[in-house]
Image 1 (cartoon, rainbow, N blue to C red):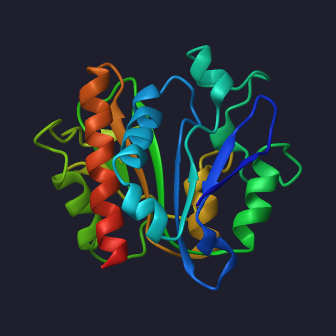
Image 2 (cartoon, rainbow, N blue to C red; image 1 turned 180 degrees about the vertical axis):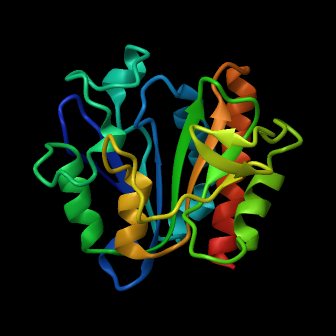
Length: 224
């Protein structure tokens, strides 16, 4: 059984496994923090619908859509004009604050934030740099979906160096406009953290399938 909590208005739902109250490392999944990135939310929901066994057996904390107003109105921002992916250092925010409080009480072993890119030319992801060469997780996540959508081959994306679809920003250099969800969770939990991107102008069904495959591969590795 999974409990569903309503933590904001309009309602944002959080689904968590019964294991959340035990001393076990959790897997954190979220989508839809930017409402105009519908393929991410669709992909997460499809993964959940097809993964009933994992939903009942894995320690999961899932936010299917962090910005339902934005999803309904095809907006990156919420109803107050706020980019919810830049306020993860604001503990008094009515939505983000309770999530921070909840996750601070947990131990996480994997964080997946699902996004889309209007300018995207393929799939790519962010993985915070820990120095040295990247591990195999990022490569395997992208490999799982590149038959559906090829990797973005741009050398620079949003001012950051990209190599074969992998961007590895330094954790001590957050964006100037605010603290993202992924960076906050990485700095707090120091676990594998990935921000997955699909090209939002591609067919919705294909984008959702790609997210579904990348979620499955990341969870497979985290559960091995």
